[in-house]
Length: 212
Ligand SMILES: Cc1cc2nc3c(=O)[nH]c(=O)nc-3n(C[C@H](O)[C@H](O)[C@H](O)COP(=O)(O)O)c2cc1C
Image (tube, rainbow, N blue to C red; front, side, top):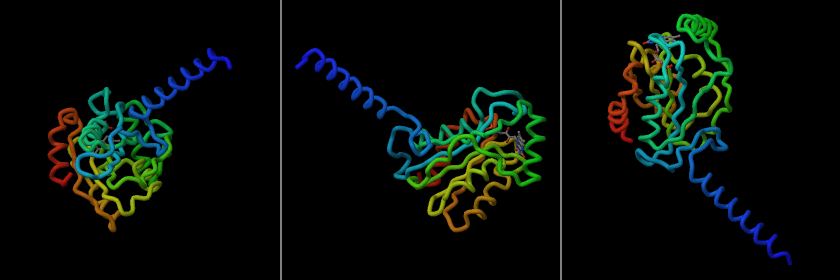
């Protein structure tokens, strides 16, 4: 028996076990396509997924480090100890506000379903799904409808949230209540885009009010 070879094999096995355990304890993208928070659940017992679309370019007032809606999404994620799924467009929108407006207007007129780049998440294991986006023309951007058409939210608690420049929820709450008339759609949260970085308290107060 070659003892040295056996010892090095054992060392390799232990190292890979340690690596596997480390990987499991860290956050990462799961097989469901959603990025896991690493915690089972929080903010109550609900197993929640925070879905959002958010941009750093093409924003009135200049580029951002982190999109307004993403900031709100992260506050929800932290409080709920939720998983997250970011909607990434297959074809990115233009860098300037004016060009983005043009593209968005065309999508609206044609009732488009812009393609999503990343695989849709498996939502079957979640009780609650938050759906967040900037308000575009008083509504969700059309790519949110691509997402909603691609997943089955039957039997789930659905919670809209938006960032905006004055429209508040616009038509988003009504749209969701109509689309999911058989499901539990909770009262959404509108946050003014430029105030998103300071919205942690407002987000948590809203979640508490909803019973989470
Ligand atoms: C194409 C387009 C349309 C918009 N339409 C509206 C609107 O109807 N009402 C409003 O309050 N804000 C509107 N906005 C502003 C965005 O909702 C706001 O800047 C938002 O906070 C951006 O969030 P984000 O960084 O997550 O993309 C619009 C922005 C764009 C680019």
